[in-house]
Amino acid sequence: MGHRLVGAVFANWAPYLTNAQARVLLFMAHRALDTTGDRGEPPGLYFGGHAAIAKACGYTKANTEPTPQNLRSVRKVMHELIERGAVALVRGARYGNNASYRIRPDPWSTS
Image (cartoon, rainbow, N blue to C red):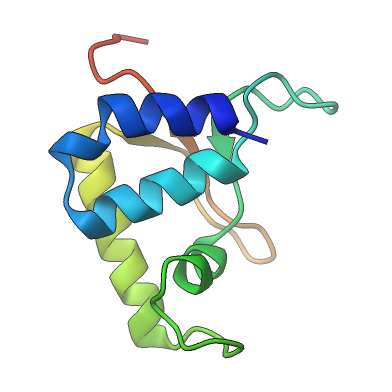
């Protein structure tokens, strides 16, 4: 999956983020594709959902579904990452579809 993205995020973003922000961004980079996907998904696109982030980053207890409070915590961190420019919202969540985010591995890049 996104091992190149993880390296770039760790080197370029992690020193400037809070622990929670870094954990969420690194998880997203790990789940995103490094290259264009089989169905034409662009590289750096995360569409795994907030529940997956909550489970992977320790916002929930093991083997439990995230609570509304857990999901609010994830949304707060996502908002902070968007404000910092680490991720960009590509498409908002709709019924039955998760939101999609583009990860910016290089904070100094304008693209």
